[in-house]
Structures are given as C-alpha cells and as structure tokens.
Image (cartoon, rainbow, N blue to C red; front, top):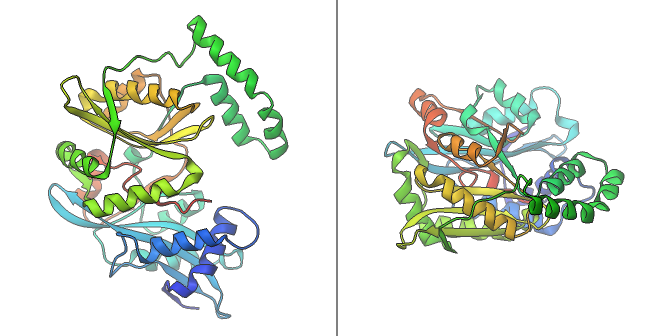
Length: 362
C-alpha cells in the first residue's frame, strides 16, 4: 500500500475524493474541479521541484487518500526561507482507520523546507497534525467579524446553522430583515453606524499591490515574497473562483495622492464578504477600515469576516468588530525556534499568503 507522489493520471480520483468527502457532494466531481486541481498541482507558480502533493494508493489501485500542498518563498528578517503549505487532506472512508492518515501527513511534511504550515485545517486534520508535532499559532487564529446589516447578518448566521427546510423558511423573512435594518439606520441605533472615510479609492492591480507589499512589510520580521508573475497568476486564479463572490481590489490614497493602504475582499450581495488582505501603516488602520466598511455596505454585503492582525486589534475593536476563533486552524512546525517566534509575534501573514486563497471551490 504505497504512498507516492501524485501523477496527472490520479487527478480524476483525487477530484472525486475532494468533491465527495470534503465538499460532501454526491456523484463524480465536475470537470472544472479536475481542471483546477491539475492547475494547482502541476502548473501554478507555487509548484516545486522537491515538494510534491502525494497520494495513498490501495492494493486494488484505488486512490484512498490525498495530501495537497505547495511551496511559498518567505523572508525572515531578510533571509529567504522555504515554507511548505499543506492543504486538502482527504481520505476515502475505507482508509481512515489505523496509521494511514498519520503516515500520509508524515510523508508529505518530511519533504524538505524550513517551515511546515497549514492555514485552514479542519478539526480532524488538526488532530492528525498535533500528533505530527504541529502546534496552533494563537496569533494567526483570531478572526474578526463586522456586521454591517445586523438583522440580515443574524438571519445569515441562522440560515448557515439551520437545516435545509428551516433555511428555506428563514429566507422568506429577508424582506422584513431589510426593512428592520433600514429603520435602525434611520433612528440611529444600527450597529452599522459607519464613519465616512477621507481616503480616495482606485482599482488595485498586481503591479501596484507588489509595490505596496514591498513598501509596507519593512516593519515585520516575517513575510511572504512575491514576484509580479506569481501575484498576477494568484489574483487571476482567485477572480475565477466564483463561489466566494466577486474579488474586489481597492487602493487608497490621501488628499495628496500618497498611497496609505489597500484592501482585497470577496463581494457577494446579501451574504458575508470574506476579507483576503488589508494593508498599510498601522496608524492608518482606522481610516482604511472606515473605507472598507462603507464600500462593503454599498456593495450589498451584510457583514465582513477576516483574519485579524494582532497589532491592529485595538482599531478593529474601536470599529465595533467582534473576535472569534471559528475554525480553519493555522498550525505550524519548524526546527527553528526563531522562525516559530516570528510567526507568533511579528508576521505579516494574510489569507492571500497560504492555502486559503487557493481553494478549488465548488
């Protein structure tokens, strides 16, 4: 029962595993899922000559398990390091018992790199990773929540937690929730009482984003390295993943035309917008958040979720955000204590920088 590198011939079986046992759909995976997995595993800028996705092949030739991943270059205090990101760990139910899952994880992360990291582990994967020497990184596991239309946001939360029948019933109450939010704004009691921003917005392209990342990362000890080709590919890939919504990329300038920040988030009207990255000097965080919240409200989202950067926590709190540890665990392992310390204390690490943004989607 070998564990071996993934081949292109394995992609249809791996896609079915992903589709049926991670996404919990029935039937074979759509052709689009195969196309995306093939791109991620064999042609993306993050494919590596040394670190490969791997599979578990049963004696009858079936692919019973898969561990995906990629390599990203990062910089620790100016020194380039290799970080292996694991993702999409999935098994057929016939092969979930015994040592198969731990062996697959051990084999994947035995491949050479300075840092082993997972940024979206579910609870079963967390258990396996803890047994393989990983630990949870507290600073990278706090998420922020900002309701913008409180009644509709509450309805969204109830619908996500309810079964299909109750969700359909709750859907009928959407018009009433919209009226309640409009009334709350008019009488001044809405949680969405937002402050107008004095910043000026423009579209953010890959070249300008690269410039921003180079300029504003200097106050951190650990960050992800990009070149223009990789960043262009990454943004284009994210724009094609429609399940989360439309990718909105905004550059912010002050009255003098100076760049003071940026944000990237998914827009899906009447749903929650997922924030991918927010950047700029810490002193400008409040103004950046004001602009983001106003923009999201105009785009019709009911609230925003994002990964918190600890040094900005006070600004998020002042802007009426809530904080939670709601899953998608970020965990890491390294033989370098200094590197782990940087992750804990002083990393510029966002949803753009790991596996979260490379989700194959539905």
